[in-house]
Length: 481
Image (cartoon, rainbow, N blue to C red; front, side):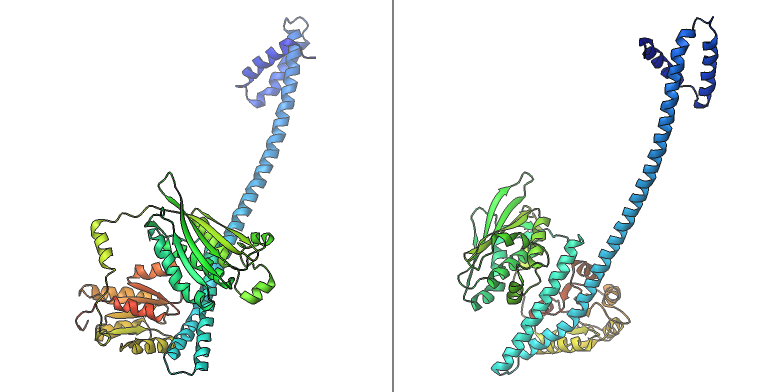
């Protein structure tokens, strides 16, 4: 039984023992035991309690030692678990990088022959064909474009999964996004006898800032799906202003409303899962990878928003996505004036006066590009690698270089850097357009950093190529060397 003085003695002892080395504890206890055996000592009764306290403290110390050993073992196990987790994270990151690189490589390998397929189909469309032959060519072209779309979806999804999607912040005009989407998909809707229209409510700001390319991608995906699953009626795009946030950003809601077949309630939750189709019959009838909605939903989330759908079987569907956009960018006066002037129509350029050098090592792709350029009235020269590009400029000056990025002996990046150094001190700057089957933003940034002026992904679109060539500035004919 503990007496009241036990607590007082314990407190005094604990305080006294704070400065006592642990290895002296045993001797200290023996000294008190000797005193306790002396019946004549006035401290003998108190020492009995003191000894009990010492014994309790011995037990507590032993318990603490045991617990400390347990903690050390647990800490070692925890460190091992952390090391294992870090190793697994590194392996996962490495696997993700390998996967992304594999997809990028496969994209490049597929785009290269597809450039020839679509290029030749475009050339054939410009020749005299029978109705049946024209139908064959159109089928080839449409199938090739569908394949390119599938490749783009897979690459986009891979980048989103790896967290490698960087959003731009440039001028964004909601009305222009609606008009561009209608322009791109109007013929597809009209072929099915459907209307396609856009509505922008009055409170929506005319100009904001954000990533118009990604917003347009979402709209095109949603409208494309709506056209696919709608057989009568049509599709309406609508933009509403939800609210202005405390940080000054604007929250907009986009709606894509169709009069199509509708979606059963129990199947809606599967819509935004990657590689998911509602059922096998839908896959067979309408096709697709099931990635479009998953990509669009993730892009909405990257813009601090979300996507959802309301639908009723036989009465159509409405897909909504809300995103957060920044206020309109304020450009310095001189930049604003330059931007405004750049929208003016460029003076007509005589193709016969434009000196073009095509740098392309693939014989089929070079054949396609040369044919397309000659049909447009140009007389291009050909270089099969970067070294030949440099040698060509030592003989004559070219206004435009269509520079393939991946070439043997010397690639397009290296050739561009050498060309800029060689011509820079002469005040000459040819307009260099990157040609590449690697169509990602990092690839584009690498080309721009090397000194290229424009970026043209493969398969080459003729109108885009001719537009870029039209941006070149002609200079006098000079021999560089």
